[in-house]
Image (cartoon, rainbow, N blue to C red):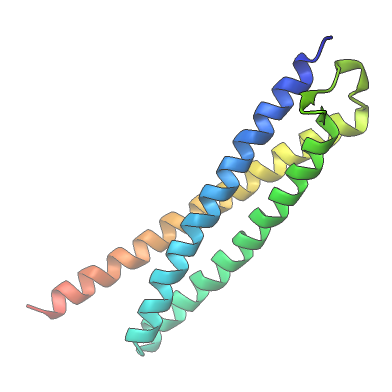
Length: 135
């Protein structure tokens, strides 16, 4: 039974599942930090950007959850009885779905990294601001 393509696609999907879950976990951590900041700091210059990041992370979280769902659907097309399907059963639509998922994952990861590092800058700036006020 020749199933190298299905095995490769399944490895890719498993990798994406890990990335999706890890990203969602990180988003939840950021949301907690930002919520704490909003609760503790009523200064609009701080609360406004924090709320912006919260909204951005919520959109990204929903995107990763949708991608998880799409990955599960794709996995169901590539596995039968816990084994990869034969290459000859992989349709053009399955290949197209895999390609589209790859592009969606790339875009979601890219947007998440941009949001993550922008939020790190924001949080770092708050630490510098707090540190500067203490002196």
